[in-house]
Each structure stands twice: as C-alpha cells, then as structure tokens.
Length: 445
Ligand code: PHE
Image (tube, rainbow, N blue to C red; front, top):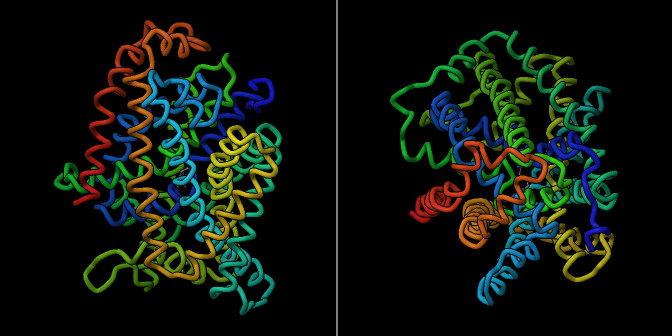
C-alpha cells in the first residue's frame, strides 16, 4: 500500500503545500478582523506568542503521527492504538476529522465563492461592464459550486502534480500581490494611524483572558490544525526530511502572511475612514468581519478610481488563490480517508466527497445565517480543538517514547540532543491538552 501512496516531490513543494493549506481566509480575512476587534497590537503580540507556544507543537504532533503511519487519520490513530478501546475510538475520531473537514469546506466554499464573484465583478468593471447577475442566492450557489469544482480538479491530479504543483505556483503569487498592495496602501493618507494601531500594543489589554482565548482559536484555524489535514500532509513527507524544521517553516510562513495581511488591512481601514467610510458601528465596535472585506475594502478601492478597480480585482483574486490552496487540503482529508479505507479510487472518492460537501454548501446558502454560523462554530470552536486534543493524547500517552524518537530522528539525526526533543513530548502530553481544554471551557461558557 505504501508504494501506491503519493509523496511530496521536494522539500520546497511540501513547505509550499502545507503553508498553502495554512494560509487562507483565516490569515487574510480572519486575522486582521480579530486584530481590529481585539485591541489592535495587543492581539498581534499574543497571537505571535501562541503561534510558537501552542500551534507549532500541535503541528509537529500531526506531522509526526502522519509520517510515522504513512496513512490517513483513521489508520494512523489505529497504528498508535494500544488496546481494543483506543483502536475502536480511532475509527470514531478518524471519521470525526473527516466530518469536521467537510463542514469547514462547506462554509469555506461559500465565502470563497463570494470572493470569486467579487473578483469577477471588479474585472468586468475594468472594462466598464456592470454585471447585475453576480450577487444574490442563485449567484452565490453558482460561484460556490464553481469553487468546489476547481478544488476537486486540483485534488484529482494527485499529490505531486496537483496539490504540490499548484501550491508552488499560487503561493509566491500571493506573497507578491500582498506586498504590492501594502506598498500602495501605506502611501495613502491616514495609513500611519492604522500602522500605529497595528504595531504599538496597549499594555493594559495584553493579558485579558478573552483576548488570549480568541488568539488561541485563531491560531488553530489558521494553521489548519485539528482536522487531519496536517496529519495527512505529514504522511506524504519523505523520511529523509527533518520534521522539526519543516514544521517551523510552515509556522513561520503562516504567521508572516497573517502579519502581512494585517499590515495591509488595518492601515487600509484607517485610510477608508479618512475617506469618510464608516468602519465602526454606533457603539464604537468594528463592523462585522464579513463587512470588513466586502464593504470597507471595496469602498477604499472605489475611492482610488480605475486603479482601485484593478487593485480590487487583484485583491480578490489573491483571496481566491489563498482559499484554493486551503480548500484542496481540506478536500484531501475525505479523499485520502475514503479512498484508503473503502478502497475507492481517488477520483470516485473525490467526486462523492464534493457532491456531499457541495450539497451541504447549498443548504447553508438556502437556510441563511443561523445554520451558517452553527456550521462555523461547531467545526472551528468544537471540532478542531477536540481533534487537536485527540492527537496530543494519542502522541503523548499512547505512542511509545522510543518509537517516537526513532521517527523524529529520521531526517534529523541530532534531534535527540536538542532542547526541542527534551521539551516537546512532555509539552504535548501535559500542557497542550490543558490549553485545549481551556479553549473548550471558554466556548462552553
Ligand atoms: N488554515 C486555513 C485558513 O487559514 C483554514 C483551514 C482550516 C484549512 C482547516 C484546512 C483545514 O484559511
């Protein structure tokens, strides 16, 4: 079976694919809105801290389990199981991961579909065409399904020529576009005020529990943790690669892009404000995050004339690209699991998964906001932390220390002498579960 599994063709390919999974709406849309809603620079500071204290160790957990087992989540957890109970629970958790990935993809596809429509609207506006058809329920369903089909097409090309090749192309393009937009926005009036709000923390806000918990949730979502995505990507890593190093690269790229997205959007908000666009509601609270991207930024682009229209097309194209490298990694979870567990071909598994997930998206669009919010909350606030907890427990409590060390030593022979090795296993065993339980506690309140 191992011989028929895909594998990343190169180190850079893996980094780009895993970073492509991590970088998405969570960074470019979620992170800046959270920064704006949670006290600006204070949130940035806590987020950066938690990325390395929590997200990196959990990411390493998934990558290590994945590469050790060279299998999907379900089979991987089974391989670590020590008795009948943990083996039986492995199936439950394996399919739970698939369900969480499917629900996330179903709402993610809807938002990405809106981005696609917005991108096309701007492109058409460049040619002075004002399409009336790109908004509304029908259009939303149409663009969501287009996005899903694009995702499927890439995933069906397999690991090396599909996911890896596309991430290689899309990720650098994304970074270049982001930098270009930052330079433009920072040259606008009002941007310096935004820069200050983004970079100078208000010390009094730093250690608020709620701020820390939001930052923690954001870091989980942003690094694609707790759905099995990183575990499965880990299973495609060659045994000659150093896992701690690869994990560090992915974390760094993800955090850097979230930081850059903040550097674009927070100053852009202030530029919009100095142009007379409302960004706070009557209570002084930030407008809903969906409005941040769909209302405030288009207003900003509009105020820049036809150059702004071009920027708008580029910006939304960038969001679609970032969403695509994330959505392919979500779809890979059901595809890998169903094809390996049920012996179905990747093509069939992909088509079946997209049909089910696409139907779920249509249901979310037709049912309106309440169901949509429920899907977001259930998957990101409950599903992801629960699965993160499961991975930490399997690695920390079930995996034999010697065998874990052996796995890590492949590709990084000196790991046994490093501080990383001395701290990480115990950290994953005790501290990470504790922190995740804290997230649960906060979301249950
Ligand atoms: N990390 C992605 C983002 O920031 C979202 C994601 C979550 C991707 C879970 C895969 C799995 O947009």
